[in-house]
Image (cartoon, rainbow, N blue to C red; front, top):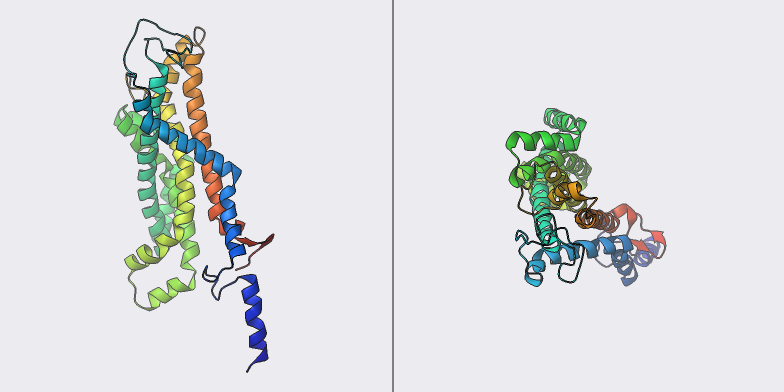
Length: 313
């Protein structure tokens, strides 16, 4: 019997560290420390704002059944019981248009970020896996896109494709694709240095199997944070394009379009610009807060911990 070996096992059990740093056999105290990160106040505030916006977009039309495009004779009314957010220059109910704008913002955010996620992940995965000339060519293209101001590039693309919501979503997706490509490449380069990648390749796994089975599952955490953060960026970009007349076209309601039409009447009715502006601000802040909270949860450098002492790998 080896006395040194017997002394080693209780130390590992007390510290809660597995043989390869796995989560199996982790004591309850360590798990509570990990779950405690879900109590991040900023992340919870962001989750609450995002959840409220989703509920407004889904349930708002059923709870507030005013037609967002219906015109009435009472124009530029201040907030009242009949019209909680007032009416616009054509007598349309502002609250109904805010609700419809929430639907537009979520649709644009989801589709734009979906485009960037698919294309950016593919570019970053190929660049990080194959390296060499593939990495050099793809990253130079990404650098060129990074050199151009994002909003200006989105305006150019939307202007060339035509002013409508579909083209605005394509333009926003193209603009934020380089950010996804850069993050995915960095994550892939990090994971490629792990022993299990070398083991899989030594056992004869194909490149597609290594990328799909071993790389993609291990870069999900930074991608989730990036998706959450850029949802707010996509919503803000859509509002900017609609304000400039390159996004959602009237008479359909969008927050950016409402700001554009209200600027002519700001001296007569300031509420007309306040409510869509507040909607944009809160939703973008909500997604940014949620992304910050998810980063605190998923970043291994910030946890998990035992007591107040970070665990070492």
